[in-house]
Image 1 (cartoon, rainbow, N blue to C red):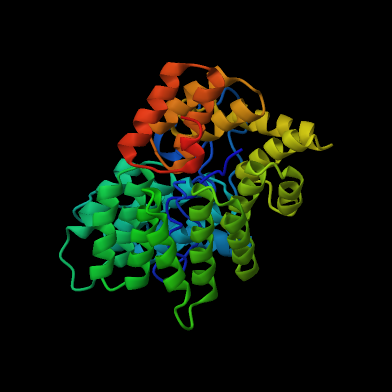
Image 2: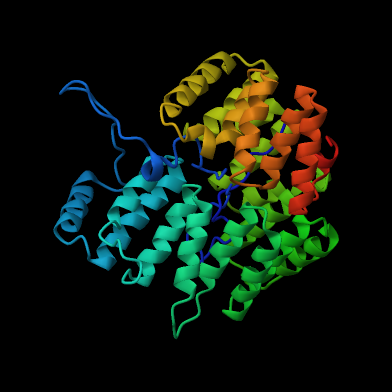
Length: 407
């Protein structure tokens, strides 16, 4: 089994990057980077056939409904109030990360739709748009927004924008471009984040010893905030996982969860437990989590592996979620990874999984994406598919013991 990846903005959890969720790109992102996430940008309009037909029930913003209505009313009256628009958009984006519900990201995008001209778009709005594009897997668009922002004259350094660009390029498997952005993070004055950024890229290339030493040094920083320590420890756990050092990865995951049991680390450890054929432990870990797409998918896979009493219900729920998501024509294109996993590990449909995995790596190339492609290729028994997976892996420069064992 495999881990599900990370959201594209997880790299930094503290004041430079407020919400600790990551990439991921990629959970998987990816948390909340599941099937319908790009709908606000690309979906085909749905035309109701009856006056009473419900197209979709919109989620509520965090906080009380009176506050939600007040903010929406204010924004409707002043759609180009940048501070107000960003406040509303940030609340929605936080909810998208927290609940794994991509509809919140679409609502956040709507909050900043008062600006259409990039030349006059405030810096904060342009940065928010880049973050939302990243969340919605529109990686090239996110990179363009960030580059436009970074090209503007500014008296202040922009470490957040550089760090986000580094993460987006990493998700795309463009490690050289990611390195360049990591170096700019350092020049902008965020040394810890820059070092972690470079260490992550080094680890992906197989320079595990150097990356491990860097993370160890960063963790030895005096008075390190707990959230930052947890983030670095999770990164170390993932490094050990890719290196094939299961015991070390297990220790690091547990240490991270003791520091801060955030959603990303919880799901990452659940993925590791599934990979290590410890599905019952994964089920216990996930039991109290909100039933987002990401959680239900893991529950289905772990349940099948463990032959649990709840497996059939979780599988049926995940299948229904996929069916509903696929009413949007872009779901498979942008979120083939998760559907490939369901096809391969729940439905045992290797040809279908391979088709979906191939479409996915055209969009993003995190370790998990290449691992799923390799797993689907191996399960399909197609030599050409294995050669394809090997070629793509070599193109990115990824060194992952799990992938290498399959090719």
